Length: 264
Image (tube, rainbow, N blue to C red; front, side, top):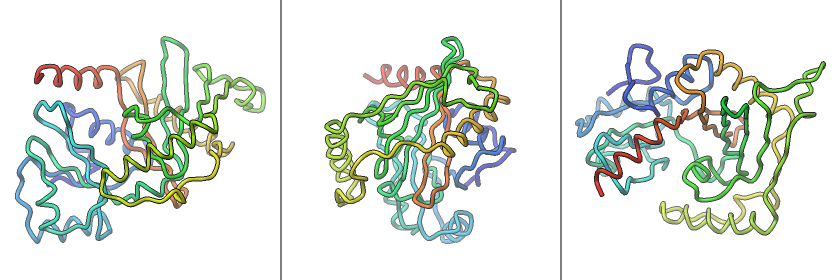
């Protein structure tokens, strides 16, 4: 049982955990979390410590695979912190990663920040209320809003970045179809969502939020040296606060694909 973020824990072979730790170290807001080893025995004492660490009776479960898998279980579900319930959620070949809870039906935005230095490109892509960033990361839907910048980000004399961007938005028809896709996805997780979780129309990211995202991508890039191409995944919770999840690189993505091919 390892409490994260933890500067003394080396997760070099796990891109999600190592980049989560990197984000915490440079000052981006992340959830507190606890990582369990594969088949680690849960005890009443560990359950008490888990509740104290996460400051909650609930947690969000993510799975970190240590063995090849062609059909991984999708994590991100909320669970009661209970000995029996968490034992039932264990999956062979994985380490269970438990984070502070989030209600995946109540996100305001799911956001990716995509940096591609060889192409001098920076893109912010987002999905709206009731969706989450996994919807675009897993290709379930396309972004509802895409803001394209040159990179490094071009600014005017008064930091007017908005003069130099390109904006693209989802069509009304596609947005309605995305709601149905999202509803069906949530039902597969055992939830019973209603259409009321969504806005009637997609609400674009406001100026102050984009300004904040620009601040964070500049902060991250100051210390990041792993790849010239990377994607930062973020959620905005129903309390209006950002939480950073991890950073994905082409190398990390290709490792996942290679593991999958070896098991086919």
